[in-house]
Image (cartoon, rainbow over the protein chains, first blue to last red):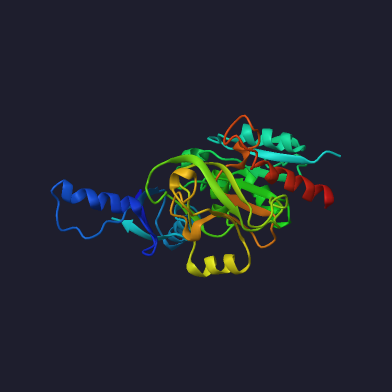
Length: 81
Length: 234
């Protein structure tokens, strides 16, 4: 079975207080030099059958209607070897 | 004939009982609706109650939006049936694109629970006719994902068309129930669709319908009497 990964991230202009909280914690923990952190979601889909264009189109549709809320989020779809 | 107002229960809904009670106190017949049932049982209006439907998994309201009951509600709402979404119900309405924008995690990342002052901006919707524009009310607020967001164009459009129905009163100290509790853009607490039949509100009017509980005031009751009058006169 092939794996397809859908990454969902808040759009750049949307405030991400969770990412900011992580970023603020970093120097406290001794990790310096990180200017910004944004937190997203990763979906790993195990796909039955071939990952052809039709399958990718279906996954794109799934990401667009359900996995991501395109009002606030962007997403990418990629096939993992 | 008695006006029937349905209240939807999804797995994780918390405030359905209070909403049914508010409907009854307003003088309508409360009808429980189950999320797996496509049939709305001849109700005249629907309340999507607060809570954490499907545990807020994925995003608040994202999974419930695809439930069988919502298919019918979306269709009927587009046909003019009054629908009120409170808190999680508001989140469901944005996910269903019956209302624009989206709801995000509170800017301070804390769950917040307090009495909240609101200003009624639009007293012409199906759910706000018993208020007057500019009136200030106090109802409980409790949420984790209450930060209303939309792009600038949508916000401008909402403002221009008078579709910001409620705003957080921002004045004085947060401790007195004033202040923006979650970072909502332009202090928006509630909005309506263009037709005025669909309204979403983050705070909880159904918890302020009896003097003995909640804020000790009944500032939330006009939501339910408004829609009742609207339906009787329709």
